[in-house]
Image (cartoon, rainbow over all chains, first blue to last red; front, side, top):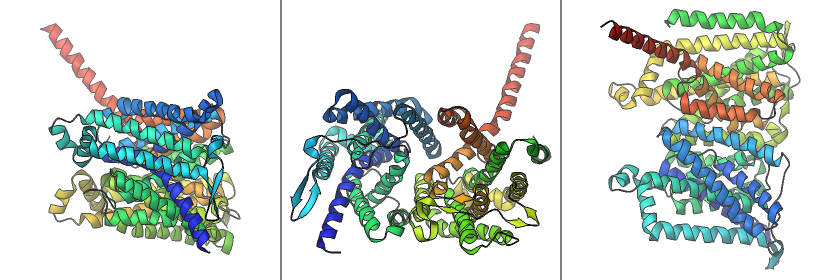
Length: 286
Length: 329
């Protein structure tokens, strides 16, 4: 175990964390604004990957697949929020079960349309190579993942902190009732946030497709990890999601490399502890 | 329905199962046995969800603990394959309860969404160990059991095993029914309805919830022991998040706070998943659709249908009388 090992593992952990950020940033906003435990978020991730495969096979363009797949899934999220979740009112249990029902429906639809094989999204040639830095072979695609997360994270942060819409969203996260009281349309905010969350998850699915693959069951594999990120960082906090993603990405990589037998345990046990000690997460507001 | 009629109805159903199931095909017997085991798990969850108001997203953890313990003892130590099976049953209940006692220390303080998340995380901890701790759990491949126990009677036979499970099911149902009817059970309902008031009345609500959590864990462990021998195999798939979610859905589908509702929900889910899936490829649409429709239109679950029908009838009758009166005036 030399310096090279630590560097490579750190790099892998950070790039995995970047992917998790795409998935978790949407989930944490949904959580923060609507207090919904959205169990179909993993399905959005998976649907994003599958839709991208279809777009690629139809047009041959990976670059086009990114926005198209994400927008389609955002539409799915929008409809789900408007037609089913909003009328349900606030009842965590019923919301959870409803989103699971949809996750099952999406699972079956994906199986029917794309089959049960393990598929892979091939990124374009200019992202496939690797670069050598200080004697380490580092795949370019992982740099792309990190760059994507940084770019999207910055945009989200700017919108949330510097614009009027962002201020309204933050108000809805902090105290939805008061926000409504001062005339903020929280229903519309919920709709937009839910669609945005689905968009980001699907984007993660497309980008992750070249890295994790696209296969049945991926949705429920990735979902608890995204929840770990959200819980550790704090529900509704973008900065928390960034730090949480990085921590979970690194913990996952080093856990698997150093103590493979308890690697998932080392991921979820901290989640339990944080929930028990500080239920609002590391960066969540009380 | 008054209490005695309810009990008699349930007893009649259990008796009918005991009499008629042996005439069914072996595959159907297997499915019914599965439904009964999952019914025990669902009823254990109903103690939390239906009676105490704690929606746990990690009930599969206790099933997993019981099942893995049974498999490890049987496969590695040849233990629990004779009369010692009854010791394994006891150990399974104790292990489930002990796990819940540990988990409860973290989980009970939380409420609402936080409780959902913390039980999810605890369930994932158990799954992580089952999936990765190769030297103990066999990792992804799981563990094969050498065979079902044998003590005077051969449990290898599907029908005998069905009777054993039915016996455990009836005993669990009776025990849980006595529990919810007891003063302790009534105070759980009080906590579900309005916890602050119960606290003001001098109840230690934390302790009440903690004990309910442990009891639910114990019955979950029992279900795990039966589950391991039913399948002859355990693997991480038994402990995944989806299994915990299934248990929740069974309870809500049947009707939370009714105990037997969990068993009804379990039968419907097993029937849809395992029976329908052999007939049509699109069975999961039906399952997903049933969940969505239940949540949207039948929050009280299947058990609330008779009451609804009665209400509806009573309403239409009174309306009928009103109409007649208006005609005669």
